[in-house]
Length: 390
Image (tube, rainbow, N blue to C red; front, side, top):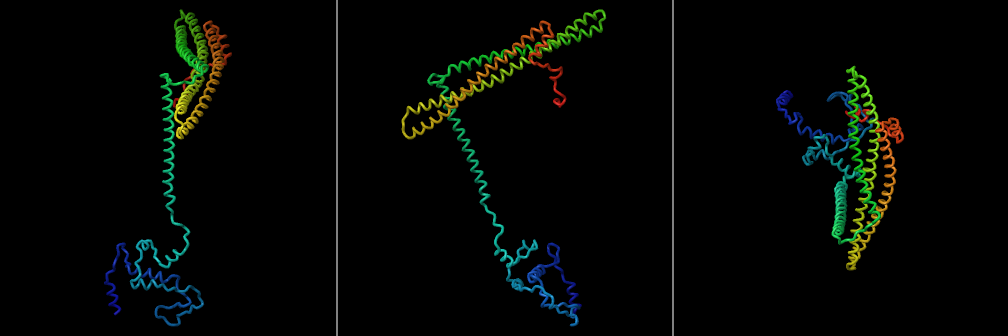
């Protein structure tokens, strides 16, 4: 009988699932049921340990009443699952090795939530905040463009009114005369600067020619014994002229640099302030004309509001105009004082250097440069260093 059962069991097909495991779904279900039945382990107080094999003698039974341990808990879901009444386990939980338990779920549900569910308020607030910020920037830009458009319209209207003689213009005769003199002076000084630069370029070429001519005379004095003394004298003369010419070039370059600073920095800064003053004057006249036009109109509630706003704008531009007018007056005064000091020094330097050079007085030329603290650059200093060439 036993042999027939064994042979029959040996010839039975062993089912293999898709994963190559020989365990069947019933085995998995049985294992899960046993895990749920054995919740906390057997109670050793109600069991005994058999020391022998199956069906051994009674002498092999050892009582274990002295051993303490947890009791076996009855799981009613085991019988429901075995009878087919219990719901099927979740495949996702099974794939993770987690067996669903209603008792565990009920305990988790009854516990107070330590981690609240994520709120959508924060995620929704970010787009709302960004949208409000974008709207605020757009409104600000629109307001700035609106103010610029209104200001440009008023100033353009005032400018055409002045051109065609239909509008009034605020005039400061004394200050306007000083501004005209400054602009004319700047043009003349620019002409001086341009001519001084041309003189520097021409004189530099002459010095280079004298240096080349002196080198040629020196070379010929070595190769022409019959004219060695004559070539030598001329070579020394050209070298001396070249040396004095380099000294004079230093003085002229210092003169050009000082004039350039006076014209393109000091005067230009004052003229920029004058330009701002003229723009402020035009805006002031535009808002003044606008206020005068509103004052001659009706005096209803809406008109009074517009008149009040126009009065505020008029006062703002009036303060700006007066402040810039004061700045221009002060800058022109300081510019005149600075111009006199600078030009007195530079004209004296230019005169003494030119006179000493053409008089052939080398000592006087060098003394002039020392008097005005003019330092000559060593030869080759204008060339960039090897680090700058990299």
